[in-house]
Image (cartoon, rainbow, N blue to C red; front, side):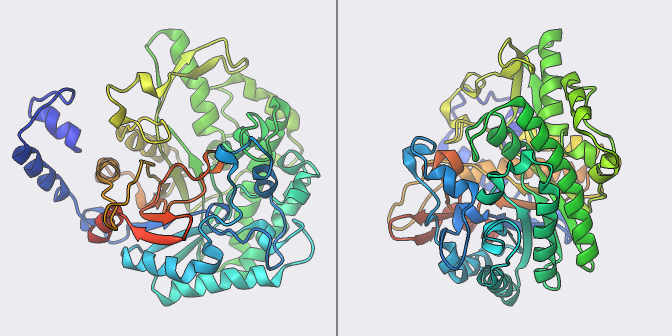
Length: 477
């Protein structure tokens, strides 16, 4: 039960509510004490998440090759203020300090990704030993400080040399990706037992190969379909390679998911919601579970059958130990003539809220109940053993005042969303972890450096780190 629900039970209306300051303060104090770490159980994992391109910097040193994001961000007009990740948070040089901050926050888990081009500068072939050594240092530093390293194998930074050959739209990527996974898992498998194959495949295929607003900046439904099918196959192949190479591995993958509601119960809006649900929530998990593509929700996906080759149905499957859900907003869908094929689009979040405080700096609606809904949806699948919230967080404008960042809106966001995660767990859903996005402010893809998601503030001019009040809140929790 979050604060909004508490107020409703008290018979108050959230909108326009005016409570005496002392009463609101008392309510806040009560809410803080409403749940604790112990309520989630001893086996519940608490962590922070990051991605290589968003934090590492060092984009062209120590043998690292060019990724699609290196190329994309160096093109004018692609990124807010023409910013890029050349330096980012300079984690490549500052990782000891950043990992020490994770320890200070009392977090158990550091989720990070390995940069494909730091390991294999050309995507395949010659291994860059300096890249291998870097992640050994990161892993060893985590272990020395009692922090579990969780590796994401692919967080969007495909080698540009492979994109030049067609990237995810080229069937040969099955072999390229398998080579990369084999090298990384053999290099670190004796130290790292927790692995994720992909980060949000719907995001990097949809935004990169259909919408064109993320790297590699391509557009086309045909390219998108090929990329999806090849990613689904690689998702399974990556899992199998990890299983073979890493003893006692805990293997998962992650999905960007949203509660999807029709604008009204009119049939056209309900059908639009089903299509969006099939595309945005079901497209990658159901093939892994042996259910194939969700044609029942979006008939157009029957076209995926044209891409199938003998043996693909088995390759698409993998028995993951856990599935990662990443939730930031809900989608309210409506029937529309645009875009074609989908015949559905999203009601603008600004029209769903009563005041701007219910929107994040990304323009996303704050809707805590949504994370409960997606956990419940995924828990209902036969074959889903464990669920981990591998990303959740919010960007809000942060101001440094006397060396502190009093990010009260972010703290309330976490309270409300965690209350819904706990609700799911108490109802028996197999949710076993929560990783905050993100450890620190970083390069937020096409939005550049403006949105700040971190528990730690980063001054990009000096690279100074300042723990925000939300970071201290998690430390106390």
